[in-house]
Image 1: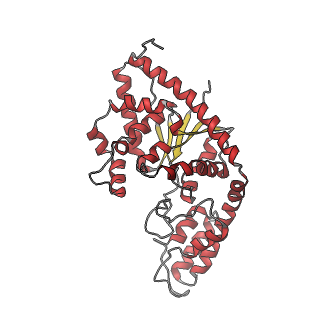
Image 2: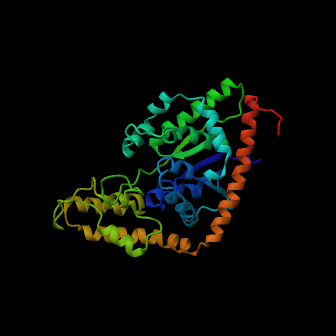
Image 3: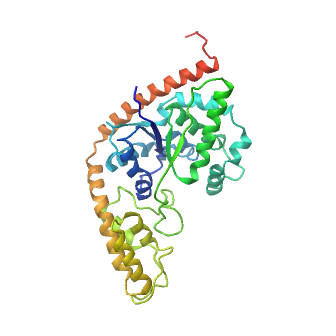
Length: 334
């Protein structure tokens, strides 16, 4: 048995992954897989909670997300990549955990409240969506993950999971379930190329890891800068300037970047120069990712998801056995 700490994280397969995913999580996962026992989940069941009327959207993107993982440097020899819906033990755990948390507590969860507002569910909230924090608790505890990489907006979900863990262990006088700790990303959430919201698959305002070089260049040209910076000689604003936001995230020479910001504020630096610099920066980052992605064979992806889901299933099955034992559900009928 490995003595390493266990990490669980994942993505909803509702589209290809983009630069926001890369800088916010994928880049860090490549480092985590060398230090911890990592389980990377493609969360199709969770994605269906608000895409139940369009399951094909989810199904079609499972292999695409896996390709993005591999292209970004995630190594299936160092971690376990699996599909959430292929682990039935997660659903049984979810049902047990639903008895340990109230509807009112779920409705008060800040992350859920924020997402309900974004998705404009109004009074038509499905039970599946409202209970997804419980499902997430099942995902975390099934693998006894003590570390969960999340954004700051997801901290309430980790706390909800830990509440379920504490209540379970107290009621059933056990230490079966393990509390988890959030690993917060060091990079701020990447803004959309339109400057109006975070980079998001559904809003179409992101640069995807699978975008061609021409598409990337076109998206950079359309990026929001400072609308009042009409002449090169005019002083420009850095705040709210999407090009500078992306340079902050991806341009490595921070000293030079500070010099560019100073010159832009004073006047004498054109938007086209900055966009050209950003294009060079992103193309250098994305070219090897694109090339690797294009070389990945479909059958290879299927083998990874199949073997990874089997490994994940074995771990979840053992946790479920311990949970059922703690609850006294050892009937001996089968």
